[in-house]
Length: 211
Image 1 (cartoon, rainbow, N blue to C red):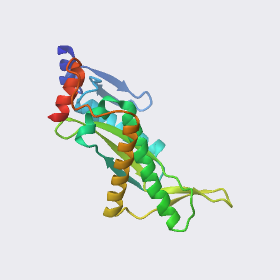
Image 2: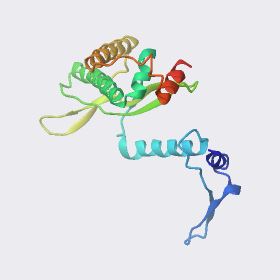
Image 3: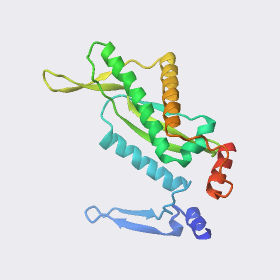
Image 4: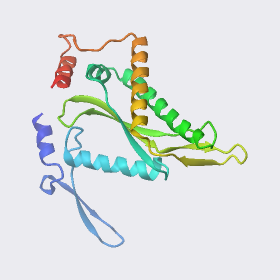
């Protein structure tokens, strides 16, 4: 709307309004411009949320261990389906994490530390690509190793693993693809290459996937 556009243009501009903050202890003054609080593509609001999310991940959630980013992209014929069906997207993500966790567990076991190791991850679903087409894909921050409990002492220790090789990544990608396709077929779903023409939102999403 026009009102939203005007708020977006004035986001972070003191001339569009601000709060005047003063510290009663040291008498320091600071002007804090109002934000549009938009959830679209406002650089100011999105940048602030991104920084706050990153700080929370580092300070409160992720342990002080190495972290590796895994990015899971989807075939063209599945992008509209998983963008439309969030339950299926979550199912594919669960499959991907289980395969990746098994890789780390096997790495720890092969190093002689024993079975039963577990890793963890935080995943963000990004719904568009660099060209702004509808392109759902997963950015997974996975602990680059696994935690294992010592049966004798009960202590939990993190075991760093070697970086995955190109062949490791290829094998993991193939296993995720095979398991995901098998699971999706068991759900009785097909791709949405031919959306219902009466469903305007789905038609627009299909056009966005196709560019």
